[in-house]
Length: 74
Image (tube, rainbow, N blue to C red; front, top):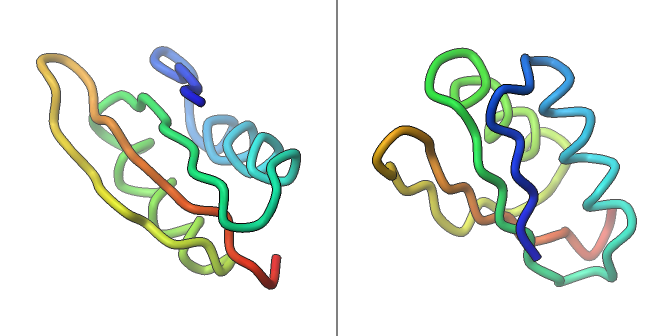
């Protein structure tokens, strides 16, 4: 599943990612497209604090592709 959050400012990008993860079963993966800057600096760290697992963070042409796995305990 891919969540396109390009153009969505922080902290709204984190909130939307968190809400989507809450809809997934534990262990499920979510790919999120984020703008460079504040979103890419804040969202991965905030997700780790919440207990989720960052699987990859890849730069694309004009955005970043973050893949996160929902934690079992969240």
